[in-house]
Image 1 (spheres, rainbow, N blue to C red):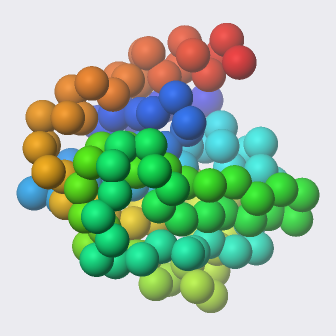
Image 2: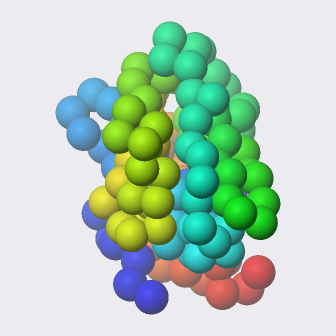
Length: 126
């Protein structure tokens, strides 16, 4: 599995990629593989202020449901509406499909997240 080095990762399998003053957030290929075929992605509330680790949304597959967590403190500013009709976009290309955008209270908070090597090491250990 190839883990992109142009982003940061959480131990709960979210990826985070800076785009200007916001962060794109999705789930990793490992996460989508463990979940299986996704049937729903949502419960994301633009405008919501969240602390790092708080639930930002949910992904549901044919075999499980899993929360998606805010990687940093900030405000949800967008949900990827394409996922309403096509949640399987994440199964097809997890690292190319963002779920929500968050405007962090402090952009440097992403420095505390895992890099690709750190994520791969913890994913291999679990």
